[in-house]
Length: 136
Image (cartoon, rainbow, N blue to C red; front, side):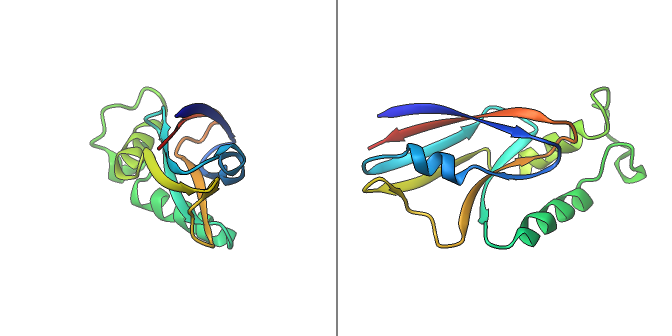
C-alpha cells in the first residue's frame, strides 16, 4: 500500500489530463483510488483521443451552470468569491471527486480511449491536489 499526491496546475476552466503521471507511478496489482482535495474541481475518466470531447463537455457544463452574474442564477447567495465560484461548487457536486481504477501487473486497466482528468471549474489558474492511494 502506497500513496502519492499529484499536483495539477490548471489555467482556468477545462479538462486537464494527468493519465501519464498516474501510469508512471502505479505498480503491482490492486486498485488505485484518486481523490481531489477541492470543492470547485472534479475528477473524470473521459475520452482522450479527440480534444473536441473535452471542449464540448466544458461548453455543456458552462451552459448548464452559468456564472452567478447570469440572470438565470439570480437566486444564488454565495457570490462574494466571484461569479465563477458558486457555479464551480455546483458542478463539483454533480461530478465525481474520487475515482477507483484497477491496476493489473503494473498497468492501469483503462479502456483504449480513456484518460484521467481534473475538470477545473474556476476561471483563474489553480494548483489542484489529487491524493492517490494504491492498495491490494
